[in-house]
Amino acid sequence: MGPLVPDVVSNNLNFIAALVIGIMFGAILEQAGFSTSKKLVGLFYGYDFTVLRVFFTAGIVAMIGVMGLEHYGLVDINLVYVNPTFLWSGIVGGLIMGLGFVVGGFCPGTSVCAAAIGKIDAMIFIIGAFFGVIIFAEGYPIFEPLYKAANWGSPRFFETLGMSQNIFAFILVMFALSAFWFSSIVENKVNKVNKPPIRFTPYYIGIASIGIIMGLSAFIFPERKASLLERVEDKEFVSSYKIETMTPDEFALCLLKINECNKFQIFDFRTEHEFKKMSLPKSTLFTIDNLFEKEPNKLLNLKHKVNVFVANDELTEKKMAIIAGELGYKRIKILEGGLETFKEQILNYTEIENPKTVDEQNTNRFRVKAKSVIPILIQNNKSAGPVKKVQKRVVGGC
Image (cartoon, rainbow, N blue to C red; front, side):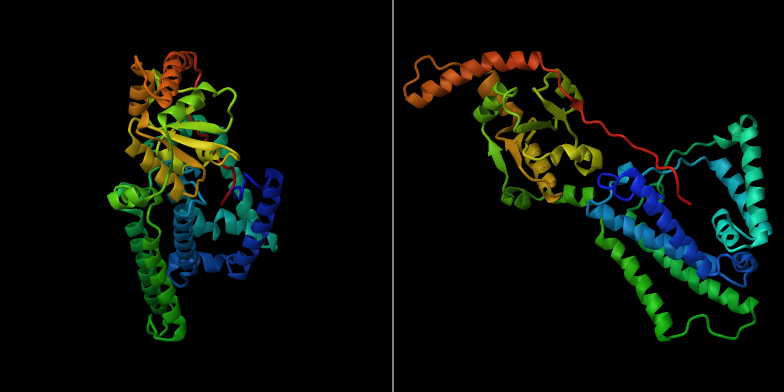
């Protein structure tokens, strides 16, 4: 079981929640008949495909659910730990697991469920599983070359197949519905039941309708990043979007009083090379990916802080600010004209020899001071650098 809401609920409470969920999960498995070895191995002999239906249903529901949570920003998929794929150990392990399933009549999860209600064969199965674990642990130096062979990293199916996750999700749901239909044909034939595999009853129509709705719902949850990137390429949308701005003089004043003013925090959207060459005081290097990631976003949610987005040009700043605004972040400002204009008007300012108006005199005096002080602040700056991300593996699960 993974942490439910680790930023709100403590780890200890998460363990209690996991225990409750685990008990409920086991109770549902038992009520579904998964504590009976005859029902479980029916998948291999063709007389009962309940296991296939349950796992396919669980898979597609979880898939659509994760897509929806990611789309609405409730799950950061970049922080979800995906076990790496080692091809040959996966194949060999799958064969051993399948053979053990057929011979023993249980998988590790269902064996514990069956043992909990007193099934002796399940208890023997668990003892055998412990022996298997001990043999693997003690013989690991021998098994290690096979165990780590053909490391494919952590691929996702739709990326490997070169298609969008929406299309892949739809295809998988349709494949599941087809598998349900085909398994019904096999079941009827093996059990010698003369019933059509598909009957136009409210029950079958309801199941098919739910499956089709789930398949189509995949298109409601496009990848959030891709959809927002597409939106900010629309000139009308960008031009009509209202974003607060700071003039180069206001930004310079903020930098001059950076040690006194804790109200502003600067997010720099340039390249890392440009950032290292000239990093502004108390600024953080940010990327568009960071806007969609959970841990970096904590900085954007700090209370009583105004988030100032800077980049070389104002258009880039505006696009980043629009994406942040659409993701629900508040108190965002951009630098008018971008850093190129800031350099031109402040850092490379040409002093007016004979200012005529009071405004010109004040502007001239301020910019001359800013031109001399800000480069020193930049030179002595110890910037936070790129935002740090930590991906943690959550121990547990089935």
